Length: 300
Length: 300
Image (cartoon, rainbow over all chains, first blue to last red; front, side, top):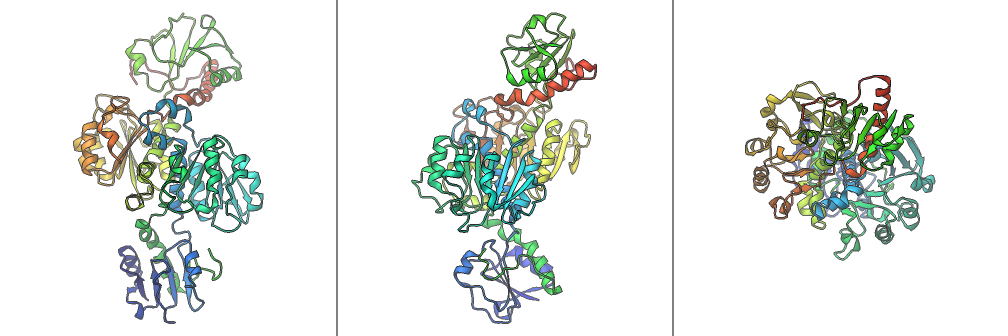
C-alpha cells in the first residue's frame, strides 16, 4: 500500500513502511497517513486515506481539536511506549529509594544517605491505573523482589500482581502499600487522587512515582506531606503545570526528583513505534484488526 | 549453642540467634562469636570459641591485621549482601541511562535530557567479576530487556547470562558491550582494569557502573574519557580514594553519579545478615558445611 509520513521525514518509520513492502508517498497519493505531530497543522484528508496512524499515546488534544472523524480508521500509539515508560518508573522509584538525588546534590553525604537507603526487596508497590504500563512494570518490580498491588477500573487481574483491586476500593490501598506508582489517565475520577487524605494514609518511608499526568497529584498537598515527613519522597516525570514554575517549592526539596516528561522521550518515539507500525501495516493488508484502534469519542 | 554478639548489641542478629534456639551470652561463655565490627578492637579468643562469623563481605582488613587463625572456623558475609548490591548497581545504571543526574542538577532541562535518554531494552551489559552479585544482577538486567555478558575467572556460566567469558578474554568484551558493571574484587589483576585502553574500546553511549572497589578504575583516565565524550557517563558507589577529595574533577562533571559507598548500607547490614546467620547456626549445630566459610590465606 501507499503510505504518507507527515509532517517531515523519519528514517525509522520509513524503514518500517518499506520493509513491509509498502511505499512512502506524498499525502495526495496515500492510502494511509502516519502522523507524527500534534493536532496543529493536521491536514484535510481525502476519503482515499483509509487509515491514520497517530504517533502519540494519549489523544486528548486530537479529540479537543476535533481532528478525529468516522470516515476512516484511526489508531494511536497507546501501549507502544509502555515498556519504556515502565523502565522510567522503575528508575524513578529506585533512584528515590537509593537516595540518588541527595547523592547528586550533596557530595559524599554518607551520614545522611546510609540510614535513608531503602530496598525494593520485600516492599509492596501499588500501581494505580494498571493497564499496559502496569503489565510491563509488574515483572520488573517482581524481579527486584517487590510485591505488586495493581489497581484498575475493571479489577481484572494483572499477570504477576499479588493482588488486583478495582478502582472503587482504592481507599484501602494506601495503608497496604509501601510505595505508589501513578499510571492512570487524567480523568475527573483521577484528578487530585493524591491529596491530603491519601497522603495521610501512606507511610513516612513511602515514595510516590508519577509517570502518568500531573493533575493526578494535588501538588500543594504533596509539598506539605514532603516537608512534614508524612511520606519519604516523590519522583515525578509529570507535573501540573509543565514545566513547574521556577519558584515552585518542589524544586527546593531534597526528597523530590523531577524529570522533564521524558519517560517516553520524543527523541526515541519513532524508533519505539516502528515495529508496531510494521505490524499494523501487515494487519491492515490482511484485513485483520489493528493494534490500538481509537474508539471515537473515548477521549483517551 | 551460646553465641556472643560483639561489639555492642544488635536486635536483628539477637533475634536470629534466639529464634534458632540459641542464647546470646557474653564472650567468655560463648561457643561462637558474631563480630559486627572491623579488625580494630577484635578480642583475644579462647579456644572454646569454635566459630567466628564476621559481618563484612570483604575480609582484606582482617587478613592484613592478622586476625584470622586456624584454631576455629571463620565465616564472612560474602554473598549475603549480593542482592542489595545488585539492586544498587541496577539503580546506578538506570539513573545514568535515564539522565537522573542532569534532571536533579538542572531544572526541566528537557532539550538536553530528551535526546540523551537511553534504555536497557536491547542493550548489552557486561558484568566484570560475575560471582554472587552477578548472579543476582543478571535476572534484573534481563527483566529490563538487556543481554548480559558475564566475565569471571573461571568462565563458568552464570545462569541467564547470554555469554560467560573467562577473565583472560576480557579484552574482547569492551567492544562487544554497551555498558559495564564492575563487580570484581580488588586484586593485582583487576587494578586499573578500566584505563585509557579499555575506555577507548567502549562507546560514546557507554555507561560504567562500579559497585566493587575504587582501584579497579584509573580515575584520571576515566576523567579524560568523560570529558572527551569517549564514553557517556560513570556511576560510582566506590572511588579511589574514598571519599574523593573535594577538588576531585569528577565532582564537576554532569555525567558522573557518585554515591557514598552505600550499595550495602551499614544501616541495613545486620537486617540483611540475620537470615543467613540463622541458617549458619542451624548448619553448625547439624554438623553441616557453613555458608561463606573463609579459606585462610585467600585474602578475599
